[in-house]
Amino acid sequence: MIPSELAAGHEILEELLSRLKAENWTARDLFGIRLALEEAVVNAIKHGNRLDRTKQVHVVFESTEEKIYVRVADQGLGFCPEDVPDCTDAAHIGCPNGRGIMLMRNYMTRVEYNDAGNVVVMEKLRETVAGS
Amino acid sequence: MAVHRRLQLTEVGDVSVVRFVDRKILDEANIQELGQELFQLIEEEDRKSLLLNFSSVEFLSSAALGKLITLDKKVKAHGGKLKLSNIRPEIYEVFAITKLNKLFDIKDDEADALASF
Image 1 (cartoon, chains in turn green, blue):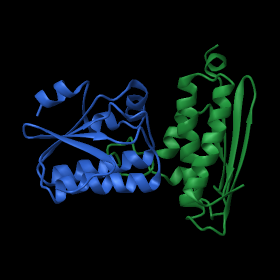
Image 2: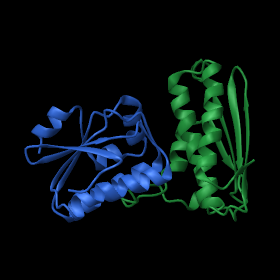
Image 3: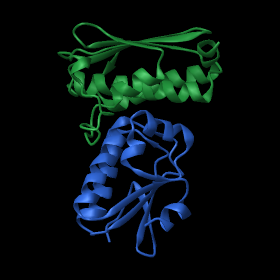
């Protein structure tokens, strides 16, 4: 459980990434995981809880030989991921926001939101497993 | 000339070459500050040719991409040119996934970029 402060979010990310580094995940996997976790945690703090320090973000993180599992839950009102415009469309390419979820989906094997849109679950298979 | 905390600025002819102080462009406060410093180059210092050299950058988030997009709009609105160079492959992939490699003029290295202004 972390408070809705971006510094606290970065602290927990560094801790999780050190753990994966010690578990010999490849640099490429670590890059993608860092990016996806960063986007998910920042979204929860900034857009979910709107930096409200009375609210918290709950992060569950599990890693095995083959994969990692992450669940990030905020106490905000949620959102509908389908409503976020596709920033790769020519009409939206100049929009400064909305690329975080796209990056999460690209770098993780599975990304799913709950119906309310305030909980995201992500999984990533190790590169060697995903490619085999 | 303004003091810059998040970027290093050098002049090569008419081109202002920007290098980034942070290897990881992640922290929200730093990204805000970086954005302000970049916007200042265009809006207050009236620079027309800007090259962002990413050689020191190992990581950036979507919030940083957002600042670059806003910078691109400001440069165009001021009749200037913005180019990016020295982007390492994993960072270039982030630009490619988001199709921002189509929006920005990206060159392999600084020499290529300088020659293209």
